[in-house]
Image (cartoon, rainbow, N blue to C red; front, side, top):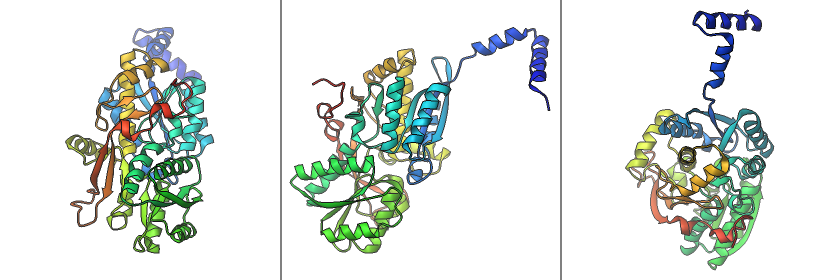
Length: 408
């Protein structure tokens, strides 16, 4: 085995052979452009694992589409599993910013993790772009001058899905809620929409994250006689609660399920016979138009599954960030954020979107209904579009968010 000292002498001999001094070799290495680093952290294991697989590939697609370099530096993508644990997410962020030189963190699914990382990013004056977390508090009390909320939030989900269901006669609700920051925020925001529309909330029950057995919770929901059982959960929890509700015959008994955060990948996992009729809100669907279909074909060459709004969101956020870095001519967080707000967001997911001062991205949101097996033409043909809601109607007005640095 060659020892370290021997390796250095050997490198010096090679340098001398090509006309370089050892000092010159070190200088040449020092002058090489250092990588420009982006970090992707998500719950790549656990209850949200199926949702997040593919985000690293989507971020790399954005890097490749941008050209692989920014400010003359090669772009490097780092990734880490925060395990849906706020302390783990915070530790990853701190190491990436302090040790690894990461300039921006994207992903951050799970609101409790996103809120923890937001504090670290504010402390360090660095950029975090939440594409997976839902809590609208990220552009409210927990807003940041160097933070963005990219894909959706609990307010928009409540406004679009909840509002449509109440207008359709679903005026009595019972909530099945994941017992942490995301579930609480979603229940709060849907409750506000339901009551403002003249409906009533008859009760609710909170379940631990990663629950396997929903029987006791579903029995309480069934006993409430509410017309709508609002599922304020996500990922495998949503899949399990819908499957078990189907086994209990809840829908056949006359109650309806409202999937308040359902992804296309969830619907595929559930299958159309189980999920048919669900009304839900997304900000992306692979089969919307020729551009989304072409992008999906490219994505599936890297990971063979239909992309969700999380996947497309990671791509969109990364591409827009790199455009802003290039336009700003610097990686300084505040200068880059200023450019991100100045430049319209245009990509496969978003047309003429804008990043507001409070960090909220305004874009169209789509109200979909899951097709029945008879309506579907292929295994991935899962949605029919009910409505397109403009961003300025879907998202909370900035003046109502209680973001500390927004005046008026």
